[in-house]
Image (cartoon, rainbow over all chains, first blue to last red; front, side, top):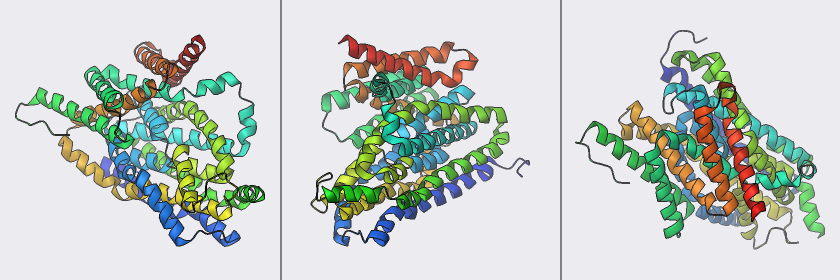
Length: 230
Length: 235
């Protein structure tokens, strides 16, 4: 159907934007089906005031993350990655590592067109795995869990530090200078300052490292440019 | 006590599964559509079908570890909101802690604690509304503005591919550096896991043979977990 060499934008990016938009926006009404069913079948509906109060409470906790998390991850995920990651969730522990490992294995650079396709496929693979596991868990649940040996259950507590360590190493090898900077900033914010909310720490870590990268790579090409403020 | 059992019976009502299907299917459909689009566009950037297959496979294999870890959290969430809601919520944006916070807020808005005898079907419905409303924050923002973020990104980098790659690398290091540091501070087994996984990933990246490449992250994760358990037992 494609065969002729159209532009990458027309062949990939534009269709992805269309699909991404309708899938995410359609997920909004779909999310309310269980709530509506409880109302319709059991007459279980809180008052409007209760719903608004609960909404206000939850937005005061996560509201900033609605836009700060997508913005912070955008330089990593790109367009297609953002649509996928913010529909399916599990961003830091699954989507980002899987996208990056896929790029590394296939041997393509991030932030290139081939890198975007490979990352999209890597994430799609991880989404399918996740859906399968989540479905098995929902059906088999606690029965399956009881079949895990205790040592495995204990070891699974350490999946997160392992995956974050591995992910960090992939890029630390390529950009050791930024790696040192990133660890230094994170250690200062988490170990010395301590009081900042999580979303702000993430934003500061991500954007100060980006700022540092822009600053140091611009220095290579021209002295005219000013460094940007974070 | 009777009301408490009652709400979980309703939460596990077979029709609740049916109500959860659309969201879960949408995630699968999106992944499928994006996969098809990637395969079709691959020739434009000289990627072979085999490379596409490999990318998909690496993603699928590397996700096994983290997905199984989610499994364990899921089981505890199922005890609170039932299996169908857990299935729906954990297939999309919002991890278990986020969803349980929303569950709690939904109940609190009615002046009720989750798990108390007063937590009835209406309170459960309030939790369900709150989880849905919360998840929509990300869905609406990304649904509407993702393509705009791309324009901003291009402006920042002046469209230079090389600079984009630097920015991407720096962003991964900034966020994963934060995540790894935060994990390291939890306990010494956590710290060992971070260090062992990072070192093995770096070594594997350099020295592993071709056939092993696809399993690199999985292997590094296993080494990290083993190191953590050894540290834990040695304490």
